[in-house]
Image (cartoon, rainbow, N blue to C red; front, side, top):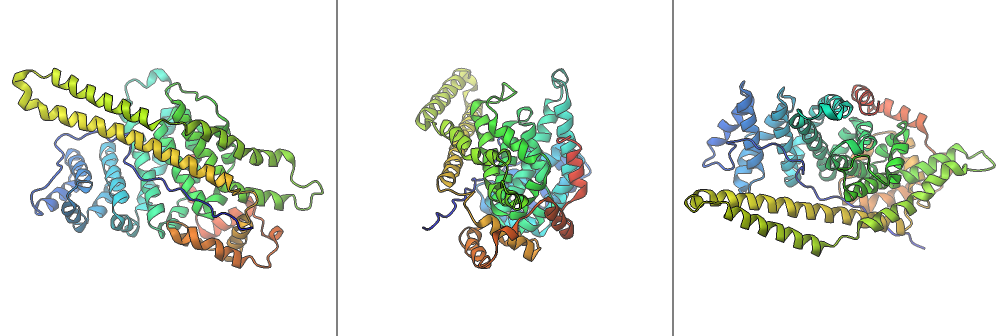
Length: 467
């Protein structure tokens, strides 16, 4: 009987819901192309305020409806200028720059490809240890010590979300980026967010989880790296089983999304985990011990329960509440205006309402995207993907025989989704599945040979959030 093809979910990209701080005076349009070089030159200004203004203005212009302005910016090497400013000493500049790069990568394929050619990966990786340390410091602060540094914490969280989102976009849109992303060895960094999920903004945890879902769904290197990381599987399992968040500010929906993402990542690595267990106990008369096998067997049932609770979302009710809220904002804003101030302040009220409406609609859209993700995961479960799937042994053999970091052809487009399974099946003809197991020692050797461990970054991450 034929096997149903695995359904691969790819989350629609969105702007950072945490939102970077607004910069007063940042432009949203230019009158002529002569203004563009002058604007970009201020990105390299010695004055931090100039750099901040230029970064915020570039961010506004890159996502404006005027495509000609975007083309002028790209023609004037805005990507290179922004990447260089990722190393800026002023956090406010970095958050604006990272937001600009994320937004343009999400809507412009050419810009995303240029980022890869300009090696944005090195710039981002240089920031990871510093961000991990900053997040660690925030988490370790006592509640009473957090009152005065809310803006600083937000900068750290927004920058981290932006940088992860950039890599996520590149992973899904530029297939050649997979090798560089693997070389960054970010698995410990991404998993670490789940270990402290109740102490971080849910949207940041969700971004890290979605990126790790994409990586483990599309690249066997990411699956092996996750399985070889001490404590990673247990961390994700604990999140899947979590009934209540330790932080009362985390909503039930946000917790459910975090649990679903953790479960989706585990579902992605389940075939490889079972293949490794099979090899480990191949000479045992009793087979795989029940305590090792049971957590993987129970995963699908637990996920279905979480998904069933989460997808009971009434979009009509949510839309009605949003409309009522917007009408209330309009009425309230108009009533607050003095008749003599009406002409001057009407635009301000309208802009505020539009902004509130955009946030509300983005919230509904984001929730529906997560519902779609949950349904896709449920579809994979009900088509019996995972334990009975021969792809685990097939990819083990492919990795051991080829030894190269071939994930550049393993994700980022329909070629992998539709064609790679057939290639694996062809490669596996006549191969004994028990000879294709893969354990932690094998993974460490492959990563060391390929130079993909990125020791400095990994050590810094493990010494902070994971510590």
